Length: 184
Image (cartoon, helix red, strand yellow):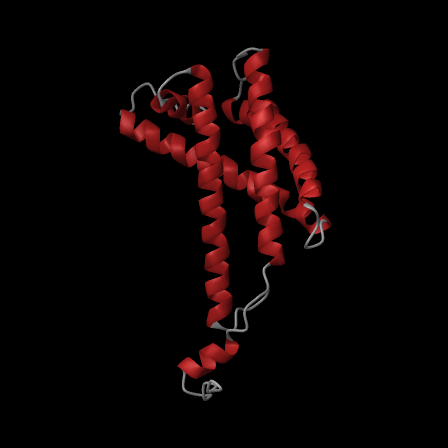
């Protein structure tokens, strides 16, 4: 097990986790907005549908349903981000955006199929209702053209970020090293 030895490593881990949650929330908001616009319904109805993936919402309060729907959507987007990490390892830092977009599109399409045709039917113990080919294609396009590339771009950005040498800053804060004096 790797041991965290300085404050910079802890700070960097928290920064990466926060960034992943922020991007997952943005990806989830985009996905929910596309669904609400496509179906021309209020967001609470979309959140109700998402919450139904894991709980029976018939006896729940509207706010409770919305919170569960938000957390389920966030969890799905985080799962999508975590799932793309192995693919991100295949790319070297500084790869062309076109390659990230193409691999992200392939991953997004594959994740869409995994989520809606494998994972959710297993969680719900029955297939999802058939909502028509137009919705299926719109949702697939959302995952392939927006969400997959966004997830891969995030992983690529996290991977290419140079770790800060905060060990010296930590020692300065603890009084063990004199801070450098600026040249005038």
